[in-house]
Image (tube, rainbow, N blue to C red; front, top):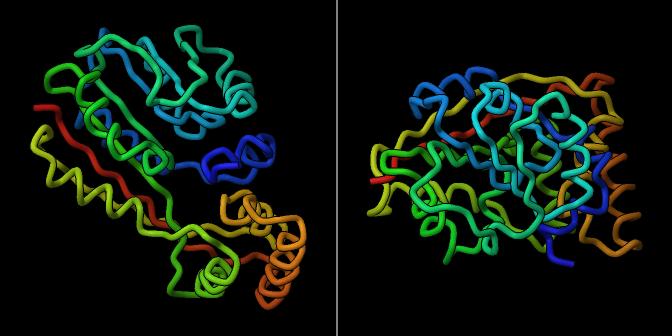
Length: 247
């Protein structure tokens, strides 16, 4: 199983464990994009809809794309009050949509899974002239507190490597078909119980891709790490947002 497909195995846990996004971030995207009611929106990798509602509730025509039937089933449930959402369950690389049409294409925690040969060329083709591409990721701080210990755990067990989001941001800044690249960062201080933190960590691809034997070992190590922290663990989170306009 590919790393990007592992989330399909735990749709309910994914919805429960994954973080939401700062409300200010959505306001910044909407302001930057200058969205009109007539502008369709495309979300790449809707998952269970963690980043969807602030855009969906505007009433624009909305296309939600994901590769997982399980995740989309929960997204449908979470967004059931909204009628203008069209769900497409297949890889973004394979979907066929009208070119030069979308006022906003955005992706939360997903764009690094899209093939490098397709990421920018296809989003550029689908955006209307002056349309906005917005990409966002939540990050744990891995240089302090429990994050520092979690990083050691990832390095011990994971075959995945970090830094992909930063590489994509760098590529977008240098891309000749996009302009007015804007980078923003938001910081939050959250608290999680021991079980909440374990549930979050075991919803990541580094853990899901392990064999059953390695999962047991990793879970034991994770529980040992968590036991060294107070009942409500402080979790500093930063969210990165990069936006650009189609030339």
